[in-house]
Structures are given as structure tokens and as C-alpha cells.
Length: 318
Image (cartoon, rainbow, N blue to C red; front, side):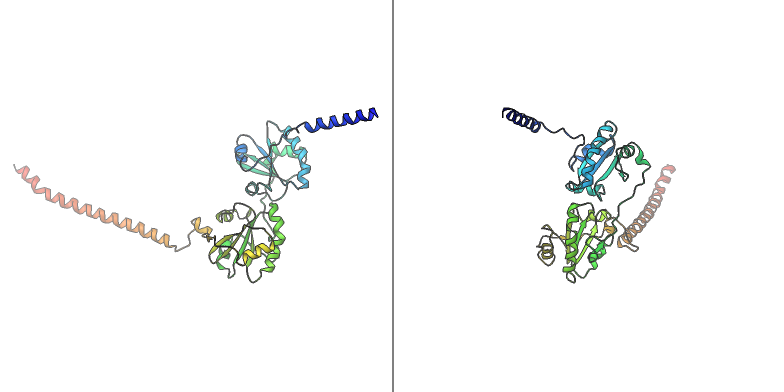
């Protein structure tokens, strides 16, 4: 009886000691939108190898011990970090995160995506110079977000919002966004339910970054309704019912004007642009003005010279 009690006391003591000990800090820092730029500095101080992950991703979980081993092995040569891409959507967008995990090496302002086998040897070789030979491909979406009943938009967004006879409901998304993925089926269902009432569309913000920025898209997904030359932002629950209610009229009065065409903002003028014509007229007018001023100066000079001649002659006569 006494030995059993002693064993129980020993077990409780060991458990208490283990529970009181703080876990060892990870050698890999967790970065956020507020700390990323300050720490990484575009890889100008030292290279940074960053893992963009999702907490629920099985591949990401299996990579954790390997990533910490790599951090210890590359200490002093390459710094390692991690970013929760589901919480830091702005960073995920900036670094073209299209799946999990996405491993990005940042060196002297350039970024290199690792696409090889996730082994310690392969990751180390890539970080220490192998990235220079690794082929780099840019992600492009190949399927319409939401399915075949959704209008897939890209560079034609400006034209679509101006030519559509129906109100246009568009979602700006990125493939690596968990919130976007969770609403994709609802978006497809919404397109069917709103057929002939509202045109439901989607735009890949990663593949069309200038457009997304021009439309003031700062988080994902961003949903906007374009109706009557005004833009209304959706800020409710992303359910079929709530989206449908919003699209069919419950969008309130808070709106913004339709953004100008992106090509106009960039200054891409079409032949015969009135601004060009005005500029040409201004130049011609300026040249004519200079010519007239020159003629006037010449006449004044001749007149003043001729008026001085008698006085000069009179002085010489004396």
C-alpha cells in the first residue's frame, strides 16, 4: 500500500514538473504583416527562407520538424521564418501563395519559390545557391472560381461592368485563401439562383493584381456589387442566402463611384485623344507666340535704330 502511494506521489511530482516547464522557443520566428518587412528587409541583410502555411494543412504539419532542423543547420547563413497565410492574407497575396506550404526564398529583393522534394538536403541546397538554377514559374488560375455558371473575369473587368445589362456581383479571390475556398461552392450556387437577375462573376486577384489594387481590394475574398454606375461593398456572412439578399437590393446607400478604366489611369491614350489635340494646339500656339514676339522685337529694334541716327549725326557734326 505504501509503495503504491509512493509511486503515485512520484508520478504526480514528475507530471507537475513537466507541466511547469515552459516549452522551448522555436528557432523559427512567426512573422506577421506588421513585422515581416522590418525583419526580412527584402533579403538585403541576409537571405530569408519563408514558409507560408495553413494550420489545418497536413503537409505543413509534417514539415514543422524539418523546417526547424533546417533553421539550425543554416544558422548564420540563411534565416528561416514562417507565416500563417490564412491569417496574413495580405502577405499571402503579395507573395503569390497559391497552395500550402509555399516556400519562398528572398534574396536581395528577389524571390524564388522552392518546388522540389521537401527533404533536408534539397532544401539546404536550394537555400545555399541552388535557387539560381531552379526554374521559376508564375501561378495562373485555369478554372473559373465557382464553376461553369460564374463569369470568369480578368483584364476585361472594366468593359464588363460598363456593358452588363444586369447588376454585376464580383468576388476578388486568391486560390491560396482558405476563406475563398470555403465559399466557392456557395458562389457557384448563387450564380444559379440569381440567373437572369444578377450576373455573378469572379476575378483572380493574383493573376490580375493591378486591377485588384485599382479597385481597392485589400483582403480576400472581397465582394463588390456594381449597379447603376455605383459600387457597393458586401460585408456580411458569405452564405448563399445573405449574398442573395444583398445582391437583390439590400445593399444600403453606402457606395462609391465606379472606378475609372485602368488604362486611363495608366495614361494609355487612344489615337485622336482630345488631350493630345489640346497639347498639340498648345505647342503650336506657343511657337506662333514666340514667332510674333520675335517679329515685334525685330521691328522695335529697327525703329529704335533709325530714330537714333539723326542724333548720332548731329553729334558728329559738332
